[in-house]
Length: 210
Image (tube, rainbow, N blue to C red; front, side, top):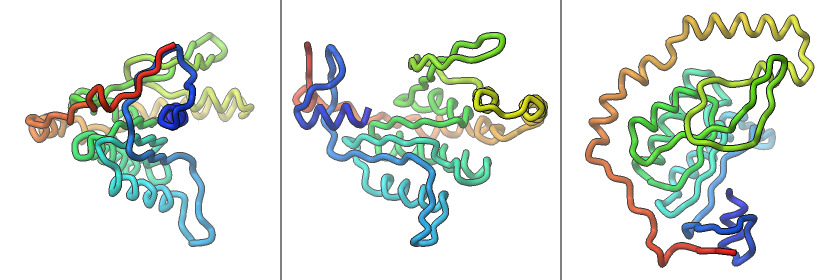
């Protein structure tokens, strides 16, 4: 997405028969998971510094691409930060954003905020394997395939079986999303009068048709 946007604004061809792209004033990305040994910063601190830079400088006409915000710390902290960052981008900055995450609880944002939508990458499940179709369709994902990915990578069968047992117990007893869901009504009330800024007019669109 970022490369297509950049190519379009450069006046280059894009890999599509037709495309309509809003003109962006800035491009922001937060991807990868690396620490900074030179400055003594952990992976999570690097992630937070880059995220802070985005939140402090993005505008409604910016393109923001975020991948797995909050993964560098404990689950509760990571989910809370990811929720707050996504909410801030949608309600305060109103930047055009793609936010990739494995926190399924964030699916709730689409039912709270009018300018948020969920999409998922499709997977075909077979009795003994999964096939990643590399297709995007509307709707939030209700499960992850980390254990299956581990099996495909060659983890021992005993480890995979044990991981499935542990996951079942965690899902059965976890209350990680209770607070978020209980605050759903409050969030709706807080944003009840909120209207996202209109998309740029036709004069600010790049139209490319084959």
